[in-house]
Image 1 (cartoon, helix red, strand yellow):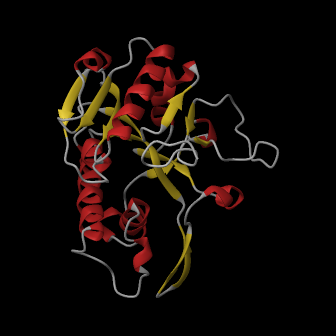
Image 2: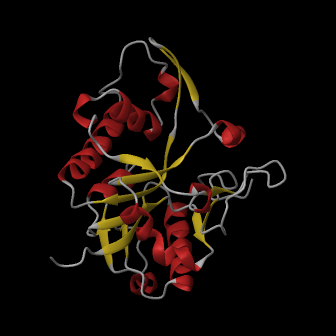
Length: 245
């Protein structure tokens, strides 16, 4: 059996600043992992000639605000690490991220949304017809085995459901529509409510703060990762037009 291919997926759509972030993230990965295979999905009008050499592959994507999910299910790699582009790599352990997946008992790994980090989240708790619920899985990073058929189906369904909810084609009765803009909600729905995915093997990456450390976390307040930070997430420090806030 041939060895599974490994690579990173970045997606830039809708706003030019996402493309600029993607270039910065790709360069930071290569700083620590010169031979990294990185695929970029972006809108054709964004692509600049001088950036092409950074990437193993470049593919078009739609202008949808959550086109990230297109890139996830269209990944050309067997073992894939998807990263939100408003991130930066700062440690050489980016080379061994796929070991985290292979040593786990899961086919998909996320980072976690926890109570002690909740002060940096835009929205985590929400009311449902069954009572108060919380988002637990964070889609900012995702490590997954794209050779598993159920994983492939899940990624496609996550893309479809997110676009349907955001574009007004689907919404469950009794749920607050303020959640419609979140791919976190479609992720929660598929993993918690959809019988099709009751056997999906998903979990949390070990020492997950290393792999998705929000820049707005208060170091004195905690929590802290056990090891060095590998990926720092600037979601709370940039607006979506790219201004420092």
